[in-house]
Image 1 (spheres, rainbow, N blue to C red):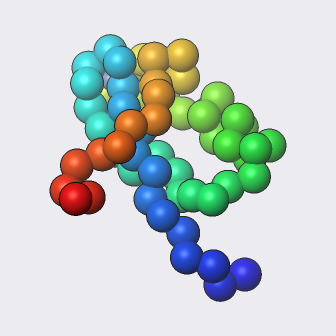
Image 2: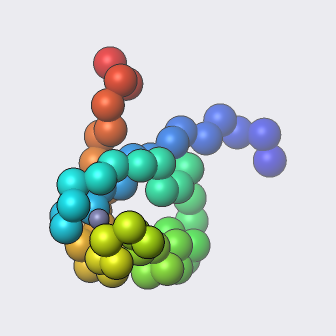
Length: 59
Ligand SMILES: [Zn+2]
């Protein structure tokens, strides 16, 4: 597939770090898998602390 994928920023609620966690669009199945597997090595927050955000420098 050669559709354009948009970076989706995610944010750690524990330390406030933001990073590109995945690329949209994505299948719902894969999305939940990726989010569940996500964690920040730096602060050890688990996926419950991570949510999607707009990110910066996009406007
Ligand atoms: Zn963190």
